[in-house]
Every structure is written in C-alpha cells, then in structure tokens.
Image (cartoon, rainbow, N blue to C red; front, side, top):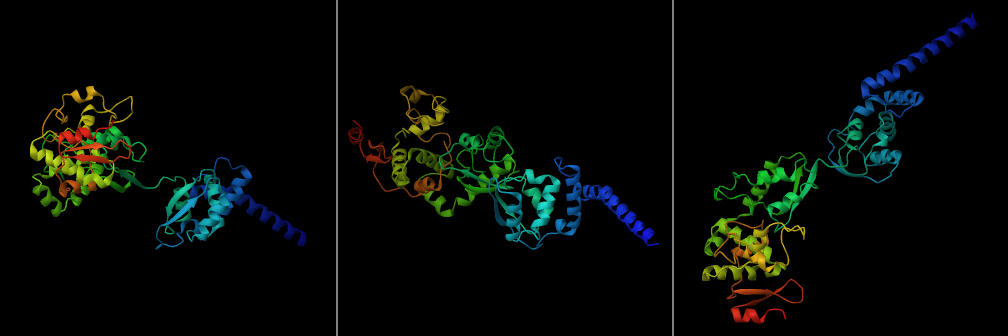
Length: 367
C-alpha cells in the first residue's frame, strides 16, 4: 500500500511538472508576449516561470500618483545594476522582477544608455519599453539670433523632429495667421523668434512655425510698438531694420550704436550701405559653406537685388534674418548719436569705430 501511495505521489509530481513545462511558456507568452529569441529551451522555461511568479508586480505601477524623475543609464551598465538603480530611485517595486522580465523578453540586450524622464506611475512592463529608446518624447530646439530661415531649416535634421528641412521651409513661406500685419508677399522671415523651445518630437512643420511666430508676438510689448513709432517705423519696418542691426553687430554692447547709425542714415535719406544685405542677396556660398559670405568680393556688391542697400535706398523689402531681442530693443531704444558710419576695428575684436563724416570714416580704415 505504501509503495503504491509513493508511486502515486511520484506520478502526480511528474504530471504537475509536465503541465508546468508545457503550460508555463504558453501562458507567459499570452500575458507578456513571446520570449527573447536568444533564450534556449531551459532558459525559456525558467524565465517563463519567473515572470509568472512576479505577475502582479510586473503590471502594477509602483506609485500611481508618482511624478517624473530623471534617470540615467550609463554606457555598458549591467542590467542587474540598472534594475537595482530603478529600485533605489523608487521607480519600481522589485529589482528582481524587472531583471527577470527584461531577460525573458530579450530586452536586456537592447536597453539604451542615456538620460530619461521616468515615472513610478508606469508599470515595469511599460518602463522596460521606455528604456529601449533614450530619445525623449520632448526635444529642445534652439533658434539663434541672426539666423535666416534656411539656417533654421539646416538645424532640422539633427533636431529630432520627424519632418525635413524642405518641409520646414515650405511651411515658413506660407502666410502665418498670427502675422496679419505682414505684406501679402512676405514670408515669415524675421518673425521666427530666436529662443530655446521645448517641443514634442511629433510636431508638424506648420505647428512649429505657429509656435515661433506666436513667441514673436508675445515679445512685442506696447512699449516697443510705441518706440518703433517714435523712430518713424511700423512693426514690419522695425523688424527689417533690427535684422540688419543683428547681422552687422558682433559685440552685443554695440547694438544701440549700430542701430543709431542706420536710423540716422534713414532719416537723412542716405543709402544704408549694409554688407549684411549684400550677403543676404547673394545667398549661399558653396565655397565657404555659409549663407553669409565673408569676406565679400567686389562683384558681390553689384548684385541687382532690392535687398542690396548699396544700390537701392531705404530699407530692403523685408527682414534678412530673424533678429534677437537685443537688436529689436536697440531699434526701439537706439543710442542718441550723430554717427553716420562705422568701421570694424583692425584688431579683430569685433568692435567698431564710429564716425560722423565720411572723411572721419575714411581715416578709420585699416592700413
């Protein structure tokens, strides 16, 4: 009798183990997807059982009310260390559960090093998925003062946005609802506000243009508009002049003086003679890989373009770049001077020497 009972126990255990071997992988597959392709038969069985053991922990957030916190995976950091670091950061309930799940799913081989924003309101399964891509959902996009639209477009491929430079330029040339004051033929050049932006990766080109132009509108205070008017300029003219001032200035401290020169020349009816407008008119220089040829050749000044202020008097048809806040404010609040000319100092510092008369200006030329 005892021998029969012992045999029955052995048979029962064998049947249970057989059921586990047969059912555990299938059940784990149904709950958590297929196992990693590199797992052998025995490891597949082992980790199927492990994830089933952790079942509730894997799918339940550690803290449903938790907020995002920074988390970094170092290059080459072992998976078990990552698991322990997540637990220490109070992002997960169990380091062992995280480790067993990523090994089962084959994600231990594809965890990406980098910086993340993670929340304990995510389950282990969700966190493991996020750690497959270190590229954040939100990206930082920077527009520098003095960039023309093409330069902004050139920064698109490395920005993280999903659209191309050409897509951006096509949108930038379309009328913007926020800029009702622009002439019908004008693009958004000059009104794409330089700044640092934090934006969704999946934003569309038209949405990006709307954000940049909206930021510009927000910066146009009543005080600035009044001061533009005091200088005899409407908003479009003021931004056009500010774009020239921005491109002509190297040292920010000189913005008010350089603005005063161009305003004085406008009031006196003298051509602006701005090298920056010639650079804009000539466009991209392949030999220099730049949109702003420097130095300019004598033949560059002969280009027949309404943007060439050595040929055509007054302001050009529109902005030549997207001016920063400093240049815009300099046009509204220029230095009070009688200067009509400026010349770069010969020391390469980027500073200028200013003159009232042309004779003084000639004397300031470098030897």
